Length: 254
Image (cartoon, rainbow, N blue to C red; front, side, top):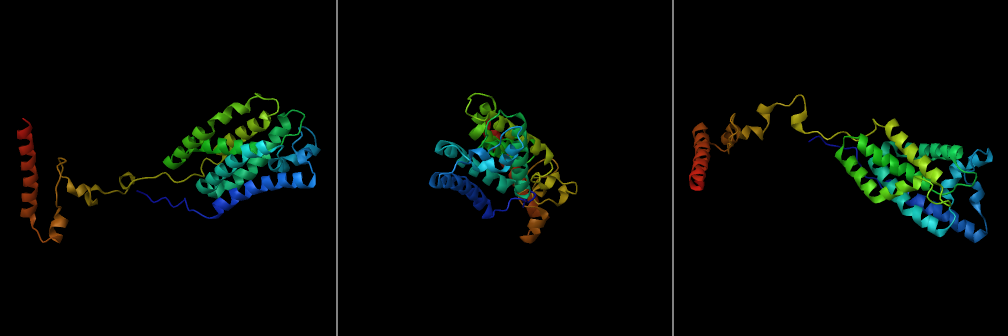
């Protein structure tokens, strides 16, 4: 099987997600301890001033429950992104924040949209659709795990609750889907086996040498027999012994 060396673990793949979690909690802690309210720095649709929220809003949350609901998904999904898509991980995150924020700014209700959920939907959508597009079984497995774990989030891209920014969720979902197609060539190599290569030679394969042209198993090949100091007669005896064993088993079954 072809070696896949695209997946190389690095400690940074854990440090970056941990940093994201600490950053959003740190901002909320700062608000509580120093009496600030950064909600006005969220995305305010179709307002020039509201454009600043594109980059600020992922770090701003309205309550502890809001933080709890976003922290684990953000850290887990970003860790998966950095591990399986390390080469394009920062592109996905930065482009995801930028374009999901812009789309929210275009379609959102006239209110301040805050929270990291837009980025979370980018990651869920990207990882899921990327796994479908890819031909690598690891990415397909990751896609299935993602939809199993976070599939229920799909319903929140619709206006179910007034206090939830479904526009931000929908924007993140659409941008993640778009990025999966934009980076469709940036995937792990498809795992291939030796016999799938064009230059594969059946006659030189050590395993296939143990079978004759009729598919019968040969215990010792010519090369192995020579290595053991045997001759062709001993090979024939070994093969004859196996055939006799098959006939004996066949008679006993009758």
